[in-house]
Image (cartoon, rainbow, N blue to C red; front, top):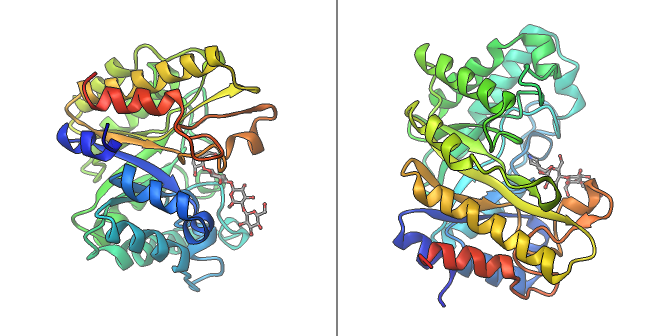
Length: 318
Ligand code: G3I
């Protein structure tokens, strides 16, 4: 018994959730669970470029501030997500030439990170997100196509200049196990740090699916990154399934959640685990993977699922 955050705090870890601004403003159950169960918050969308700088140099922090204020009220830390990404970035950015794009990126980072630099709740940022393709090559995003790989180091340096204390992360998906993509990530982080680029942390998103199997070398993978001297964290955990739910699938899903939490607990450099939402009422999964869902730890009616119990018991040491 007792909320997840109590057990996480006893283990020196965070347990977090991504939050959406609309239910946070409008639903008491959503707000109460978010406040009581988690000690870490990530904005699911509110800190992304399309939300914070929809037109050049016209910043809008209404959603971001709502998340940060909620976290402050509830004694939770905030992980800023995300500064430089190929998705949810306005067309005006994508159409810029190289010199203008680099300046726009640096200005965006300076303004967004700078706004929260002295805020005690905001402790870390995803500086770049999803820079690789699944083969481990650089993703040929508009960032890469216009600026080449140098945009990554430039982004980290701009973030450090805007906040000398924040923990600066690189974040990606399908890097939970040891594979071509995670090895490319490993090599990039190693090389950036050798060049003095301020990469402090690596985020493993953790968008898992029971039908694809569990990445059994997760702990070993986290450990090899930790040996580079970076913090590691699970940033966007969810475990989807082919619908409808049944008890067997729920049990498998619960095992995946437990395994992820246990892997983080076993690696001292792992700061914690963020779940990508908490209720199946609000999840990106059904919108993206037709026929799949039920990926989170509460159902649509805010009832705890076996996956909740698994996270709870793992954190409680059971
Ligand atoms: O903002 C518009 C709103 O004005 C409009 O009324 C509404 C109608 O559908 O759409 C709103 O935008 C949606 C936005 O979420 C905010 O709700 C977009 O259509 C929708 O595509 C967007 O999806 C988000 C997705 O990132 C976009 O790439 C998901 O909520 C969010 O969970 C997901 O999160 C990403 C991480 O940032 C990075 N890693 C992968 C992860 C899952 O895709």
